[in-house]
Structure formats: structure tokens, C-alpha cells
Amino acid sequence: MNDAAIGIFDSGMGGLTVLRALMARLPNENFIYLGDTARLPYGTKSPETIIRYSVQAAGALVKRRIKLLVVACNTASSVAIPYLREAFAPLPVIDVITPGAEAALAASPKGPIAVIATEATVNGRAYVRAIRAHAADVGVVQQACPLFVPLAEEGLIEGPIAELVAHRYLDPLMAQKPHALVLGCTHYPALKNTISKVVGHEVTLVDSAATTALSVEKMLRKAETMREGEQSYSFLVTDLAERFARVGKIFLGRAIPMDLVEPIDL
Ligand code: DGL
Image (cartoon, rainbow, N blue to C red; front, side, top):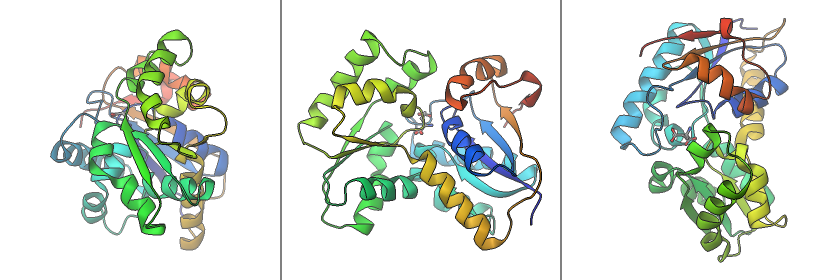
């Protein structure tokens, strides 16, 4: 048993979908979530900048004594994982790409698989590598959907604007006839209904939040570091704490009381 918290970070509030899945799966753990709202988006930045920001965000969580780090940001997961593992060894670090790739293959073992993500994740091809590591012949098609992030943050997750943008990004991708579509960015699950409407219900949408939570549970069990007691959670944000609490509710699926939100500088 280890009483320390599980640290989670994302560039903003999208990673709250991962926290939500973790809280549902692990009812006895403490969670500290860091949203780097001052520097969002990571998805349009260079790999060097994303690595620097990620190491700083993880460092702030490590200072608060965590037993495991979840990188709940696909962009950071796609470029910064080796650097985080090295900087904070022996802290276990879990990314969202590996569980997402495994979930996609479970949904569509023969492919083709479509991946939508930020520009940095698409350019880094982390999902393509993770899928092909298990199934070398599976076809993978990718599409960056940068406008989905501000749409989700504005709460414009359904209706004509969201659908127009979704058609623009997804129609060319659907011409490749994928059987599964990976929501490879933490913000995209908020637009799930619209995406599903546009691609059709026969395409399985893969959201890595639940599979990531399962990986965390497995790792805690293996290391015998599960906690007993009541669940607790708190938040660190680098800007706009009030907005984080207000909009974050959409992603977390429950209210975020302001007394649990601490503004910090990185
Ligand atoms: N959290 C990022 C991701 O999952 C999306 C937002 C951003 O670009 O920072 O890729």
C-alpha cells in the first residue's frame, strides 16, 4: 500500500476525461491533476517545446509526492514519454497512446484504423508506431483536427458548427473506409456524439480513457501500491482557475469546487 497520490497532467482540461475514468476505476486513490492552461495548446508546438513543458508540468506533480504519473495528453505522450521516464526514474509513467492503440486493435484487429489527433501527434506518428508494433500489416490513416480543441473548450460540442467542422476533417478520412476511429486527443471525446453522427455508427470510436485507467490499475496491483481509504482529488492550474472549474465540468462530468483548484506557476 502507498498513500501517495496519482499525478495526472494535460495541457488543459481535456485530460479530465482520463481523470474521470481513473476515478471510476480506482475509488480509493488520491488524485492530483495539473492542467497547463497558460500554455495550451501543446498540439501546435514543436517537439522541443512540448518536452520542456511536459517535464515542468510533471516536475510540479513530483514535488507534491506522487507514486505514479499519468500523461493524460496525447501530444505530450507522443513526444515526451522517454524524457519523462528518464527525468523522473524510477517513477512509473503511463501514457495514453499505448492503451489507445491496443483498444483500437481490439475493436478492429485487421484495420484499417483511423486516428484523429493534434498536428504534433499526427506528425510524430506515435499511434502508427504503437498500432504497427502489435500488427505490422494494419493500415492506419491519420488526420489532424485542430479546431476540435477550441470547439470543445467553448462547449460547442453539438449542432451545425461542430458538424460542419467534423465533416471537413472526417469526410476525406472516411473515404478510406476505416472500421475504428481513435479519438487521439483528450478533447475529442467531448465531441463524441457529433463525430459518431458524421462517421456513422458502424465505425467504432476508440477513447483511450478507460483503457488507460485499466493500465494504471494493473500497474498499481503489480507494484502492490494500491491505496485503501476514501478517494480524494485536487487540481493545479497555470492560468484561469475559475474558467477551468466552470468548463472542466463538461470533461469531468461533475462539479469542480474552487477550493480544490490551486493556481500555480511552472
Ligand atoms: N491535450 C492535447 C492532446 O491530447 C490537446 C490539446 C492541446 O493541443 O494541447 O493532444
